[in-house]
Image 1 (spheres, helix red, strand yellow):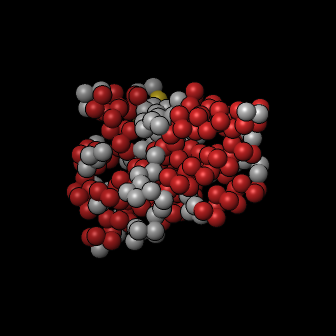
Image 2 (image 1 turned 90 degrees about the vertical axis):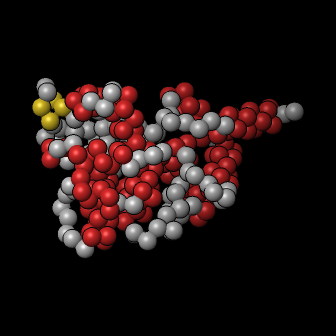
Length: 240
């Protein structure tokens, strides 16, 4: 076996390795493996073929690893590879064509490009508009009584979009997990996700973090200043 064949065989093993697990969060080690695969053209082609193949599986549930790889490829200085990816997966790692609500694709685009502040604002808009559609009442923010009008499939896709384009760091289900792990204490949640500054709720938007370096669960935001009931009901609707 030639040196090139050895390298390709090693790359294939690494690709099988990174896709063999169901990650809740992407570790530095896994990201380093992905970056090493994407260094050369052969590796990029092999890993693109894998996420395209995975996207066409029946009952496919897009994973965090797929979202991260999609983001990384879009950011590579290789127009041919990017065009191949966009041709096969033009809208992102998640196929949103089955959803009637149309702003999910705009949200996916923002998250792919790590525009987290804009994505956060759009997420709040999405939630309000979904409630408006189901109640015929105009909404600028949500009360706990409104949560029942957010279908679970819509809440799931909003949460999934945030998770897969943040290495598993952001999302409502991530926040719920932190809340549950801290005995459902709201003050502990605010502390862990760093919505507090010296014991006081941070000022929006300047005191929040809008990058992937933000603490786990930091995004998306929710208007906790109006109380915790809405977030409590939202968490109760998360069953995944």
